[in-house]
Image 1 (cartoon, one colour):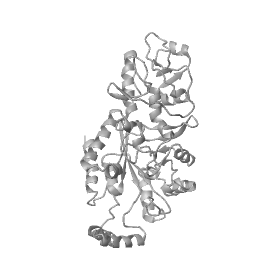
Image 2 (cartoon, one colour):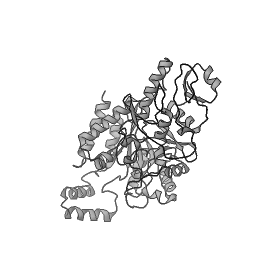
Image 3 (tube, one colour):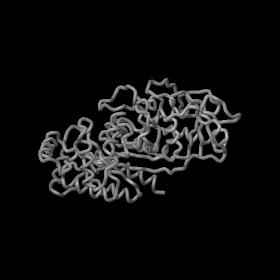
Image 4 (cartoon, helix red, strand yellow):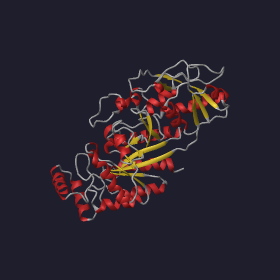
Length: 432
């Protein structure tokens, strides 16, 4: 057990301590309790209480009640980026405030210039501007904190947890040709001919005539990978009733999609992939959730926004109101990395109302579409980036949540290398 003393009671401090140390922490504002305790302890105050106490000096963020611009100046100490600098001899920055700033996504509550989809772009982030987006920085700070604490309390250790790899699959477009509207395929035939895409023309014809499997139907292949490497995968299904904009999956009334969902739900966790349209029409979210619930015969509590269409604080309260308990959107649609600088699930903190919610956030660090379309990486560079994110997450015993799409894991010429890359990555990291 770790005891933390603060002369001021604070919901923010309680939250970040519980998040970082799980239940193996207690916060007190009673100095006598702190003095008499024989457990490992941290003095989080400006006052030096013991002759030899481990002290972190607060900068004030955790005692504020509002949301305001923070003066952030980053510096490097012991090879890691820090901010909220203090004069503490042990740890020269306000570790608790800095961790809270990153995990609560404080900067996203402040005004920012959105990207073309209205999202918080990675280039706005402190992590990107100071070159630590590729690191689970808060957990690296924690590892260092443990070492310093052990100089005072040799028997202290952080709560133990195991590294896990969590592949998730967004089923935005279950089938390329089959079960699509007739006019769409008819136009596709003409378009392929006019643009001299003869391979696509032949492929479309072969699929429609039954000589070839639909290229996007990679679900048996993915299932085999999950079995081979004993992966606990999660599938998110887009179930928009109206085909519009980026919402392009086949209609949820189609038998093929319904059978796919039912089959998947028998073996894996399944979640809703709220359509882009749910951001415009509030009633659609619950409707899509109800559709998935009826097909799986399960209560739907897991979600990831389609196209990662999310803004803080607007999106999360809507999901909570719809019964969502676990949310998997937190990551960037423009770059890979650790958006909250943290690779462990945590509960969303509602800064506006200064309270902890029961919505559990599961951040992801890699998405195939980022490597392909945003970063435009060659396959070998994408694999190196994926491996580095694996290494960083494993180092801190985090959860490596990744996003893959069935329509980028095909045998079509433009995607075959990406499919092979994923297989090679799994083989190299799970073979032993």
